[in-house]
Image (tube, rainbow, N blue to C red; front, side, top):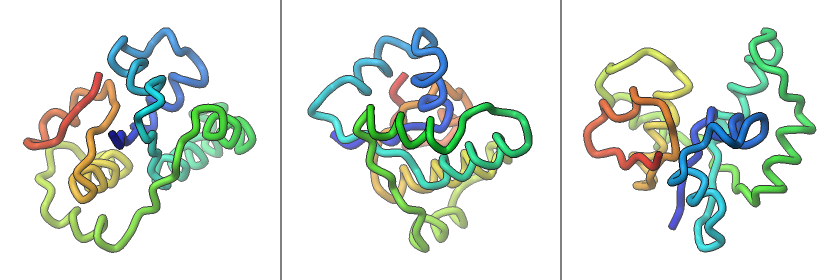
Length: 126
């Protein structure tokens, strides 16, 4: 099964894996799952690190992606067009882009963010 990791899930896995729920941890460890991370999440980590809100270097991010065998999901025009259809349950542009990808790709999102649940039809693993 393909699963799309929310940015926070990657951060939790790197900095404090005990914060992951049992379901999220199982989804990350299941060798049958294809773990994907949005290219948007990489941009979010880079931007927030530059602003001093996170302390994750490019090398730490690269190593986590290698260690967890994560595939990067590019953000495409189809994903961007899906944003036109999303209700505005919240304003976080990074989350909204990840949600658009999940809908477009028809894959569940591994996230602790309760705001994702406001989007009817999205499958959440937590």
